[in-house]
Amino acid sequence: MKIVFAGTPEFAKEHLKILLRENNVDLVLTQPDRKAGRGNKLTPSPVKVLAQKNNIRVLQPKTLKGNLNLVNKLRGVGPHIILVVAYGLIVPKEILNIPKLGCINIHASILPRWRGASPIESAIINGDNISGLSFMKMDEGLDTGPVLQSHTCVLSSEENSESLTTKLLSISDKELNNFIKKLELGQTQETKQKKTGITYAKKIDRKDTEIVWDKKCALDVDRMVRAFYPKMGAFTYIGEKRIKILRSSAVNNRSSLLPGEISIDDSGEMLVGCSKKTNLKVILVQLEGKKPILCKDFVRENKDLINAGYKFNTSE
Image (cartoon, rainbow, N blue to C red):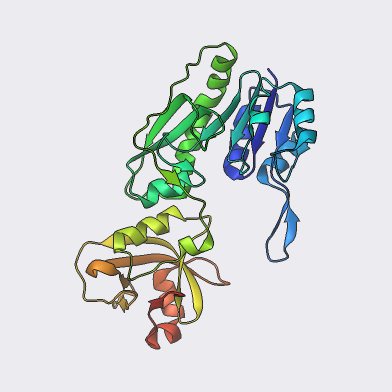
């Protein structure tokens, strides 16, 4: 079976790796190289790196819509399927119609919950107990196509994006290649998505990861911390310095601390006031330009900031 794979980030790369264990991939689509790192050096996507390592032809179009050159190249390949995982570009009708068995998207939620760009983060931010993967036949809508298979997993109370991603990759490790075989043999069945329970996960930008202490209770802040770890990191400011909170926990007792106000006990444990008179225990932080550090060590090494009476604040 001829397969074209379309994907960009690490999550997609891991799916390509699984796919290559039992299948040949004829062509890879991934987004153009981006500037990254302190030197702003053009950097290939993780998918491109893996594809080149396996001598797979790579195309990096800036857009798919109206790209007749790409359409002709895909028709020349004659794929049975185009497998799409976190590609980041909208696939137009003229490409959806090319593969004989359709364009198949592996989406990191149980559809129709969390259609869109950030299903993993959205599940954690909203306190979901269940997530999973949907193997979906793509149509022209945003994650609206019929589901061919779905596989669920349970979220723990301490789930973060890293641990949930690991769970989802474990599902694909067990199920993806079996699914490809069933698809080739015509043994899959399309199920229309429910018309109820539809939610959308918007693309996350930097502003979404800033903690606004007087608008979030401790549980909501902790969910932010877990949702944005480790890729982005929920951040705040101490004085004029930007600091990421990488690990935390919500404290049950009600507090007299004002939102953003810091309290440190004799052992160096830090509590921060949040809305609704709740407290957040801060465990792991990363000051701008520094490496992650346990909060107790941060307190010991940055007494000038703490003793100056600074509290955590926002850019607003």
